Length: 65
Image 1 (cartoon, rainbow, N blue to C red):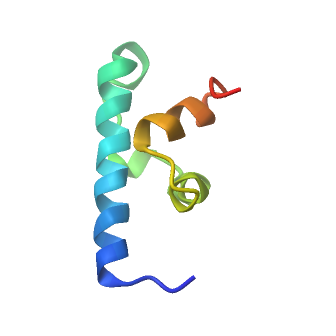
Image 2 (spheres, rainbow, N blue to C red):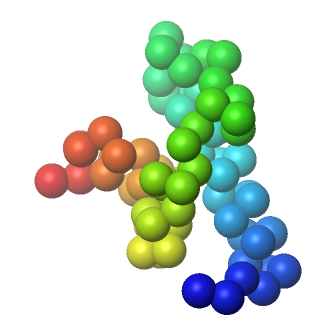
């Protein structure tokens, strides 16, 4: 997959949105989470599928069944 600057900006924003939602929705477990704490290669396929950050979190925690 070729990455354009616009796609990179979108991916970067998506990552920040995921972290913000994790902090907000799961504050007990993820209060101190940062960008460097996430295994982004594992999450990138969810981004490529077009999932929103919330939908990606639901899928990652297998709540999207």
